[in-house]
Image (cartoon, rainbow, N blue to C red; front, side, top):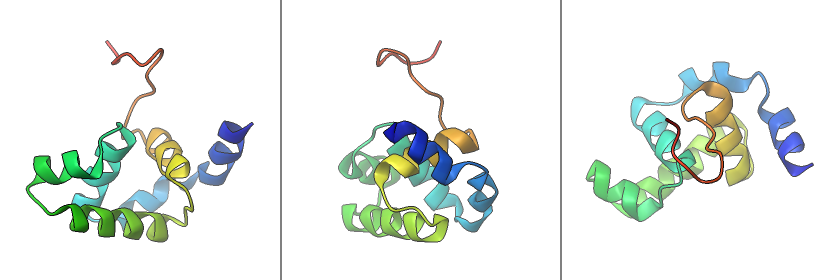
Amino acid sequence: MIEAIARDRVAGASHKLSELSTRQTEILRLFASGWSAERISDALSISTKTVRNNHYQIKSKLGLETDAQMVWFALDAGLVQARVGGKEPP
């Protein structure tokens, strides 16, 4: 049920992806892939605070309230693929 609510909130919202900067889109993709703020900051050579600030700005720009909604948005926009059983897609 929670998944259905989250999916309804972001359905059709992938057009909003253009409101994000290239860096914010990358942070969204990594976050939705399960990466922590610390891992993202290491990979992108930016501070953890910058990652967290972008995380907040992403939610604000997209009109999202929760991290689950961010993940559903990324799935809907095609930034990430769903994993079955916690395994990477083939």
